[in-house]
Picture (cartoon, rainbow, N blue to C red):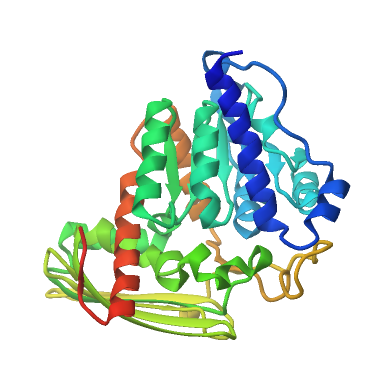
Length: 398
């Protein structure tokens, strides 16, 4: 066995131990005995042997996928794989055995608490990472080292250095990396982008974005730990920062303010100056009562467009709280979960469209609408907003 392969196996076991400990800080010894943690398979799997296996369904390549993380976004993505013509789900990976089993049973696939089976399965050619943000880098790099393409939830990472390292690792291992900035696939935002690009609205002056809802609940309440989520600017308003970059090019500077409480609640407001001269007001809130809503207003010299999801009444999925895992902290599974916006039209389903776009990229058919570098750009704006809100100063981007 080569040293490289040996180190890779140690890396898998080490990361999985860290992953387990982060999720089960309470009564860890008891949980380990009950769970019977499986380590990576003792097998020599050379990277050259990890062929990109495709199944053929009526002449269409069907990619085999494992979802890593059976939380809110994992369930959202799993629902789309059940409807996809280009990808099928084979594994659901989650440290919570019952949660993995529940989603896997609903999809008629294999549940595992150990990523090893999926990483060492030559039939699996992509890992869909739906873990908390602070685990993204390790999970993405581990998948890439095993020759798997990676589709990762936004934000790409918590730091620009981590994000760039993820991109570099995927490139050096010859795999594709996709980041799920789904807003670009929502029909109303897609239409707004096309109207701006066509010049129909004339010269754009001021735009306003708002994204508000209750405080989200995740595993062990990780959203409430600023060091693990980076708060509203990086986890929530990053949607709108990415849209600004898509429509108007790079950001020049940001000035922001935020308020947070131990309840927990958090509210942030950023004024973003684009290098093109456009000025944007971006509001993000985890302090509003339900329902989750989002809106925008774009003003140009020849007209304006606006959208308000609260008035348009799109379909919105409110996920039920997960039952408490044995040994979890009180309140860790309570609350409304995460509100996930939905499109009522199958052919316009943004989550399905972003998945199909990524796998078209994997097949070499086209570049995706969102490149990893775009995700880094949005992260830079979010981090600049945090810096501005902390210092009270205007912060330049880039």
